[in-house]
Structure formats: structure tokens, C-alpha cells
Length: 165
Length: 288
Figure 1: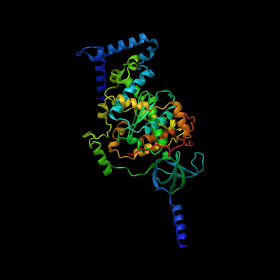
Figure 2 (figure 1 turned 135 degrees about the vertical axis):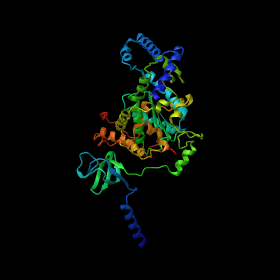
Figure 3 (figure 1 turned 45 degrees about the horizontal axis):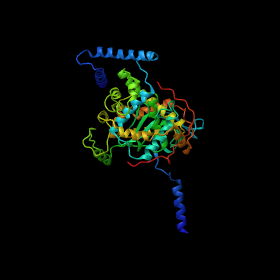
């Protein structure tokens, strides 16, 4: 009996916890919070530049956020995700060494994993065999169409965007 | 400095092919040779006169593909394909479907993932597109891959690299010479400079912004979530600027934050109600 109660309590606690760790973001431009992830949905609140939000989930171009001004949906591109900048971890530094890259970006050794800096590209020699291999994987338009069908991808018509000045 | 280097390479290549000797006025002789070449071309094909005289010589699709083939072969010489057949077939399936939504669906499109921990992607004229293993590992779903490929497809369909080659060389190599030869093509190599360095050249900033806006449109047309592409830009923007893996990418492209700004303006609210698929489950994952 007691165990059952604890189990129920545990389930309740889990249910109200967000499934994923909360991601934070900063508002890039004055923006409105919508009730639904659509342009013509009801406006719930407004956000100012620099406001902090908690990002709960994503739907297309919309983020579901919680903020001091209210919760709802905001256009994704108006929010800068506030993740800490990824510095070089110790492991990554070692990976850099293993690939023959010193801090200068110069190749000091070769172990098979190659980088692609300008010097390496300039010195590159034509590899006919590798090119043939690459070309052998070509997909025809018809194959691409059936690949799209398998994924239930439906083409839609949409004009190119005007170029910003 | 860079453009001078190219002119010298091209000039010497051109002179060698003409069998001329050194030790005279480079510029004058080059112009003379160019004029002869142009006149010869007009003679063969009077319809091309307008193009030739306007300074930008029209390039046929055959020539375009021959140039791309040479660049692709060189790039693969620097970084070979990841040896995973299913991965290579998968990226060709996604890429060809996205390219089919463009105005050049019938180019011989080729896509590949290459062995490099750098985060980058490359496009060569005629439809050769390569993504590094490092960039592929940054992607979380098929829509993100589609967006990255669509950006490169944008460079190909708007001929961004081809235009650079045309401007820097002003020389049109005969279409026959370009397309007759299979495999390593010396004439094309002269045109593109050293190795695959042309892919490391910076394009005009606006060409990058244009490719970004094409990326979201082609993704949406293909039925994908168009916002997966700006998410990739956001992720890359979070990588420290001094990280080796983004050295070349950041050198040749505007910073992701600037690209996102421009993309935001271009998209405005036009795609707000577009709901596409991300196909996270179908996404082919590879090991670092």
C-alpha cells in the first residue's frame, strides 16, 4: 500500500518535470508572444530586447517559451539561444593534436584524419578513383522522388525571398 | 595579393598554351591573345558575340560540369569520401530531392560526405557538393541536412563560384577542349588555379546571404521544416571563434549571427506558417 503511494507520488513528480533540461534564450528584437504557433494567433504578451526566456519546445519556426511577461509561442529567429559558448575541451584539444593540427593550423604530422585549410586545398591532387566512387552514388530524380514518398515529404510551392538591402 | 597571384597563374598558363616566350609586356600580350581568342570564338559562333563583348563569357552546362568535376576530384584528393556506402547514398537521396525543387533539377547532381573534422561544406560548379564529417556530426535531423545541402545548391544554381572564375580569368576555354577530356583536365586546372583552392575562396557576403535564403526556400519546397537550417547556423554560431574546426568556415563566411540577422529580415513572416517535417528518425547517424 505504502509502496504504491510512493510510486504514484513519484509519477506525479515526474509528470510535472519538463522532459528535457530547460534551455534559455535572450530576446533579439521586440516581439509578441502568441497563444498558438501561428502568425494570426492571439497575442498574449510582448517581449523587449534583452528579455530572458526559458525555451520549452519547438514547432517549425516557433519556440514555446516561458518568461516573466508570460508564456506562449515566439518566432524562433527573434530569440538567441543562451547556451554558453563552447570552448575547446581537453578532449577536443587532444583530437586536434591527433589529427596533426597544432595551434597554428599547420600540419605537423599525418595520422589519416585530415583538416582542410587553404594550404591543404591548394596542394590537393586530383583523385580520379575517389571521384568515380563519388559519382557512383548518384541518385536519379525518380529515385529521389520515391525517397521523398517514403518519408511522406510533400512538395509545396514557395517563391524565393526578396534580397535584403 | 590573392587576385594578383591568380592572374599570374592564369597568365602563365595561357602563355604556355600559346607557346609564347617570356620577357615582354605581360599585359599587352595577354590582351592581344585574349582578343584573338575572343575573335576566334565569335567567328565560330556569332551568337556568342554579345556575351563575349560584355566581358562575361557564357559557359555551357558541359563546361560548367567539367570545371566542377576537376574541382571535385581535387577536393577528394585532399579529403576522401567517408567509407560508408549507406551514408553516401543517403546524402545523395536527400540532396537530389532538394535539388529537384530548384530551377536546375536536371544537372548531374552529386553529393558526398568527406573525411575531415573541420566544419564546412563545399560546392563546385555543375552540381558537386560535399559536406565534411565534422559538419555532418553537427546535424540532428534530415531537415538540417537538407538545409545545408540547399545552401550549397543555392551557390550552384546562381553560379556564384563560376562567376568568380569568369571574372578573374576573362578567358573562355573552348567548350570542346573542356568537355572532350575525361578525368584530370589540364586546361580546366589552369582555369581554376591550384588544386581545390577555389572552394576556399570567399564569395561576396551577399552571395552567402542569398544562398541562406535559397536554403530555407528549397527546404520548405521539399517538404522539410525550413527552420532546421537557421538552427544549424545557431549551433555553429555557438562554437568558439578560435576553434580549429571552424577556422576556414569563419574566414570565408560572415559570422552565423550576421547571417541569421539577414535571414530573419529576408524571411520576415513569410515562412511562419510553414510546417515541414524534420524526419529525425530517418536521419542517418554516423560516429565521430
